[in-house]
Length: 257
Image 1 (spheres, rainbow, N blue to C red):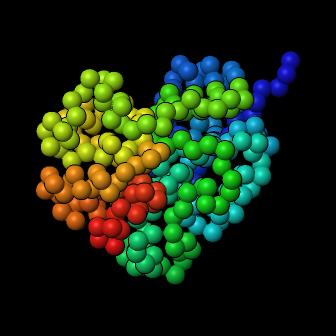
Image 2 (image 1 turned 180 degrees about the vertical axis):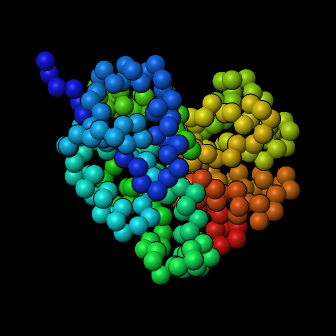
């Protein structure tokens, strides 16, 4: 009987939400467990198996010197490496440190800052090692995650859409909150995957899934300004879960530095 592909799931600086998305697969998780051998997944089991691993899923950003070393070892042990979630693909909410002096944060938070050893910036995994695929989201869509795993096990390209949240709204028959109600929304520049949850409840998209493939953020910013958004509003809205993603970072800096 041929050996099953060995899967590893790694955590760096993150909230564990994307790993929980995998555990939320429930019934599908049983089928996955039959198709692969779980070699390393501390969120689910203390049992570990040595590498190499056929597929590694990596959650979290790099924020310490130790993590910068550890991700290189993970890459060495992994035939394929897929980053999952906003932290791993864009630096996460912790990338807000990139816009200030890290010493000020450390001094404000820790009673003994001299014991803290951290990096000045929170960076995505791809800034340190080659990545075979990036799955965006905060957290990732569990069905998209299963598709990515299935695709790599089958040796094909994952069928993950590259269009914006607007397409999901149209498919669901949800009226555009930006056009119909004048509600500021990041949907036109945000990667699809959430199912347009917020617009479905009459709220604007928050950009949880990061920038879509070709985001026209300056055009959207002008539309927001026409609706009454201030420079501060635009500065803040692009500095959330995907603050370190280049299109969002660039647009936030255009409205406040």
